[in-house]
Length: 435
Ligand SMILES: [Zn+2]
Ligand SMILES: [Zn+2]
Ligand SMILES: [Zn+2]
Ligand SMILES: [Zn+2]
Image (cartoon, rainbow, N blue to C red):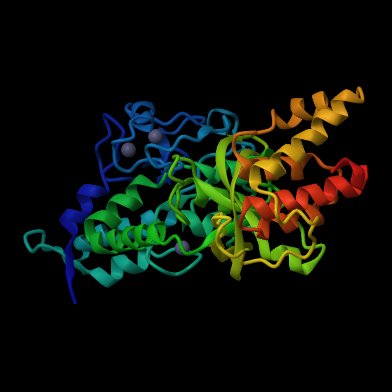
């Protein structure tokens, strides 16, 4: 059993307020993650002079628990301004509470007096400190510790998970918390983090490594079930449920899947389960923009890239993750993996012929004086004429069909089949003489 010299412990338990420099007395942990003697605190300003600067300096350990978007990500990210706003859950009149966990750790130092032998270095067992640095939620050693205004300390992930169940402290104290957004980029508890790094360095390194492993594991794709998106299509949606915000955070930090080759984080989008067979197919999307909003929502803009088939789906922390097979196009010369259920008898036609038929439909509509084509291109952009693959999806987007029918072309792995299907749809809508 290893021991810790309390002299080492004492160094870390110094009050960081300039001019105090004593061992902490009645410690309280502030929103910035600093732990100071309670009597220094007035209002909500942190009495640590370097505090504001430290918060901005990413290099200083411990850094805030803000989103760790990997460098090189091309996604645009706008954090909400909740950090600078008023904290809804704090009562300004209320005096700061004392952090009992830190007080318990300070008690290790006091015990020295009882022995009355100042010359003999006092030690405690590592296990004693370990017990104090345990998460109140998962009962494991803290990882990325966050201390709440009610002075309870949890792993960042444990705290966020507990917020699924309500905006109160998960412990019996039941203090009211601000919403999810307040904790989204909340700074770590610097004292706890320093204690962990000093006395249990392997632990944090191992957890970091385990996370790193997960980051490289691209086997699981997080799936957001919201609506049909096709390759080339841009769309936006809102995320407000905490479990999906957790999913989004993991996507942005690329915990689930490495970013796409073009530098955007990715996830899978699928439509709602109206008909079970459709739910086997979805579309990978690149997350191009995320805007966090103070009230807890996130606006997300995405662009469809490539269809996938779900091989195996599971639930993770309240959302869906799946092992998927990416369905890239197979050259038309090879046999199609998907049987063509509807043929428009265009078997002898080549892709350029099929493209021409599709575009002919647009010209015809224009000739008939429908301004609908202008309206379509305003919403969906110009047809990608030089890219038959994207063109097939473009037509699927603009045709007046239900989404379940459109979703079927996600399973088709060549442009020829998809264009064939588009022509079938056109002929059904506009009459066979058109094609
Ligand atoms: Zn002090
Ligand atoms: Zn501070
Ligand atoms: Zn925990
Ligand atoms: Zn509490």
